[in-house]
Image (cartoon, rainbow, N blue to C red; front, side, top):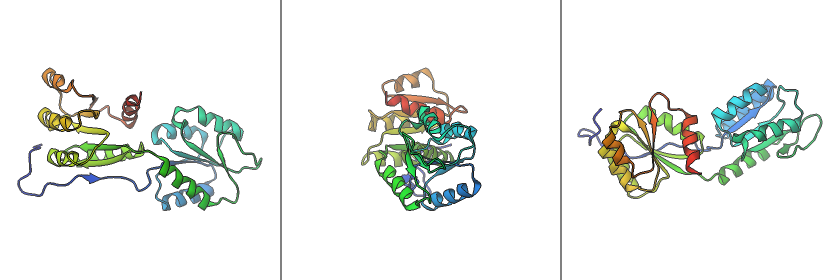
Length: 252
């Protein structure tokens, strides 16, 4: 695929791809009626959400969905309410997550969680979600890939991790954007060419450079990249888990 300046159509600008509310909500509830009601309310409010009807679903959802808020209703488990909250808190993905517990028959307020009295006050829940949205410190990722479909999919992955996303298929648009804006991560495909990659990296020398190896880099090209903080992902093995691990490593 040619990546030079197009001759016959306007150069597209950098496109912002962001969910209006990028706070992820995980609902744990075995009652189908309550589950449907909560999912409709959360969807209407514009928040991404995932549903777990059984306790066995919870661990998988925590790893794949990465929630910012958990709403815990009647889970299909023998564990008591406090034990459920304690089990959730033991998961690394739940370290900074808000847990909202819908009041059960025992009417206790478990430690490490916020109790939601019955009947459920959706206005109160929505206020908590809005507060969580405002508290979330978002960083910006710039995606530069000629494959616009991959850009869209990748943008959603970053959004699930709480990032703002700017994307473009063209180097020219990316360079113009970086002249007036700052970002925290640059993600590119190696098929764009080493010279083009270096041109962009030079504009943000202190920003980590994530590269998807859609074309194998030779030793000379790897040497040129060594002066930047670059992370190379193998094509065919790239996943949201690998992306999250790479982002987490930047914090340490």
